[in-house]
Image 1 (cartoon, helix red, strand yellow):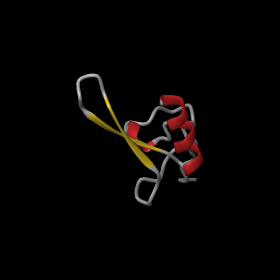
Image 2: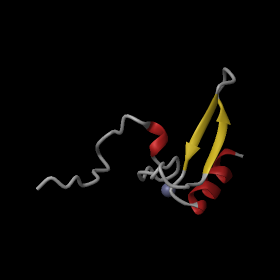
Image 3: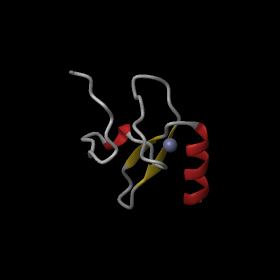
Length: 63
Ligand SMILES: [Zn+2]
């Protein structure tokens, strides 16, 4: 058996590849909702989301 099953308890090395709202893995090869934020020191960060409802929820929480 070589199939890899997603394990939600395993930290991913690429933080941008998980949904910022629910933590689900995001398929970054495909189109996915995203939003940009700025950190305190002015750097732009890109947040990825598994679907639009997660992006909307994240916006409601941050605004
Ligand atoms: Zn999500």
